[in-house]
Length: 211
Image (cartoon, rainbow, N blue to C red):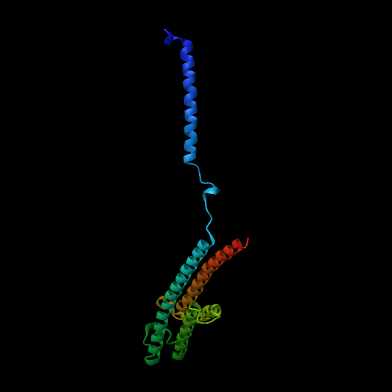
């Protein structure tokens, strides 16, 4: 019979193989087209209004974050100022009644302790002024706060080392104002950096427009 002819079977198989190869190749091309990566032509650049709106939204967000964190740290410093004023009032009306002041009864005079607490208030006020931009030279206020805080810390540590036993529960006397000044300077640095990044983005947008 003709269906059992070897020549017919071989020719039929070759035609089927070629057809299957063509179908497979087409399928591969289709799958590659379906799952290919997007090219540059698939992306549409933002127009000028969209760029402007994006930059403005970033500026608003950065300004809100800056105001929030500056006010948070200024509020914490205000709480510390209130505590220092309480200590000053206690030392003025009832000298050496507060335990952390009584440690220095034999070392320094009462008015020096009061003066040191007032210096701590000054350090915190300068830090708040720098954080909230009360002055045009707010950066100088922050640095002045840090330098004064260092001097105050040296004073308290020197007198604490003169004690018979180092009092760790009074360690906040040297480190409290200094830490407040240092954190304020760090927060101001971070907020300024983020503001500069947004300004740089706006400058890039303007330079792109000029091309």
